[in-house]
Length: 251
Image 1 (cartoon, rainbow, N blue to C red):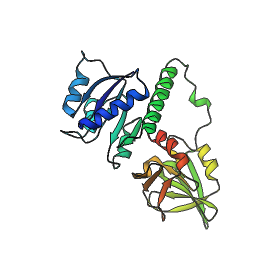
Image 2: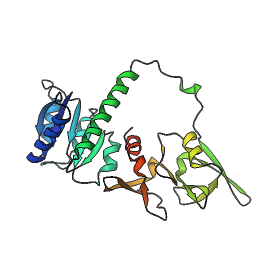
Image 3: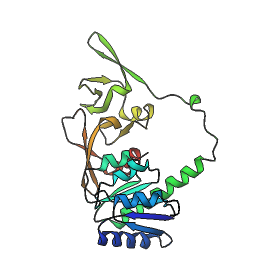
Image 4: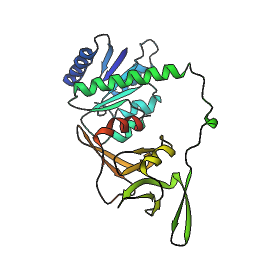
């Protein structure tokens, strides 16, 4: 596997390279590049060996690392390495493999490389498999019927920000702030809603990806999420669901 390290701090770059080779000595580090413009030039140069994976710092000496992705419409998988957590949501929307905070934990780095290899294997396998007829599968639920007194309402799933458990009942909350009771458990909703758009982050919340305003890393095993509209209590991803949540963001 060939990798490219884009990092403007020399000591950080050397440490990352050492960690990578310590995990897998067969990995070939093609180059360590400190800037956005040099990275773009490298990737546009047909004479250069193209990496299978890029380790990308966000704050580089000349610009923001996201400019590389935007300028090249980059399709090469990326693992972000940064000291800042405020770009987490943007990173996963850029289809990154993982988002590692400095100082990089060797176990988290190893897990990110394992994830990359698994996704690469799935991608290669899918190119040789006969496509499944999607129409033959049962469609995901597209709308919900709700009642409030004598009135009946119907809502498309695209209008729903999240589902929550309140006082042992399940409610849906719309982007306009209104909420209505529904006759489904969160477990059942997880089965009938499109998993590409909805994910159960903890025992009481099943959220739409479009409802996420921001994500904050509180500690190694804790993520806090800001939702729109904002719930009455702080929203955290259950520790046992963090890996699945990150995979969902980057799918």
